[in-house]
Image 1 (cartoon, rainbow, N blue to C red):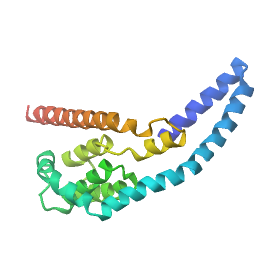
Image 2: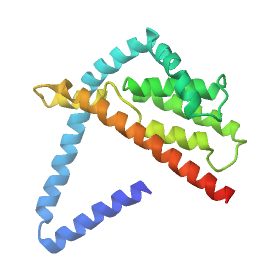
Image 3: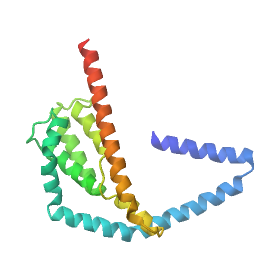
Image 4: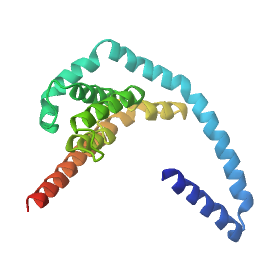
Length: 197
C-alpha cells in the first residue's frame, strides 16, 4: 500500500511538471537526489558502525539484560494477559531495551519473536490480541535514549553540536510512548465497554 502511495505521488508530480513547464527541473532534481542518497548511505556506514558497535558492547556487557530486569514490574502491568515467565515477555523486554539504546537492527528480530509468541498465546487467531496491539503501539513510539541514526546524520553534515538532539529525543519519545499507551488503553476500554453493553 505504501509503495502505491509513493508511486502515486511521484506520478502526480511528474504529470504536473508537464503542465507546469518544469520537466527539466524535475529531471535534474531526480538525478541529483539519487546521487545524494547513494552518497549519504555510503558515507553514513562508518558513523553507524561506530555507534552500533558501542551499543553492541553495551549489549554484550549485559546492560540490556539489566534494563529488562528493571522494567519487568512495569511491563507486568502493561501486558496483564502475558504470564510473567512466558517467553513473549522476555522478548518484549529485550526489544524495548534494544530500542532504548537505538539498536533498531537488534530490536526488530526480538520484536518479531515477541509477536510470534503472543500469537501462540492468542491461539493463532487471525485478529490481533490486546497485548499484540499494545506491543505494536509501544514499539512504534518507543523511548530512545541514544538516537543513533540521527546522530550519525548530524555528524555527517558537520553539525556544531551533533549530540544536542539527545535530550529532545528522550523527551519526545517519552511523550510519544505515554501518548501511545494512553490511546491504546482508551480504545481498549472503549471497545470492552461497547462489548459489555
